[in-house]
Length: 92
Image (tube, rainbow, N blue to C red):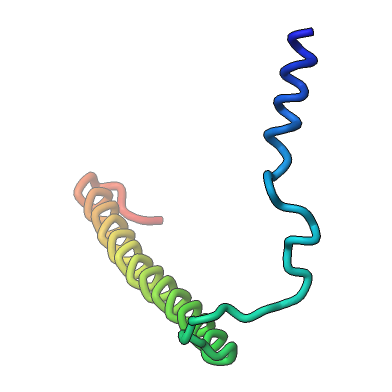
């Protein structure tokens, strides 16, 4: 009996109160009092510009990081060459 009561309580919570399908709008109606309009073309251009800026920033940062890695590898190779030369092994 208690589970039946909770089932009905759950069903009552799921249904919106005071709203039927006849009360809801079935067609598009513009918002009254809103004077902020944005052009779809302008928003599209802004979105593409933002994406391109992000892509260029990522490429630039990757390029800078790769240059740092290249310098570090060159320094490590030079250190290995000096270590080999000082130990008398030489390069083959």
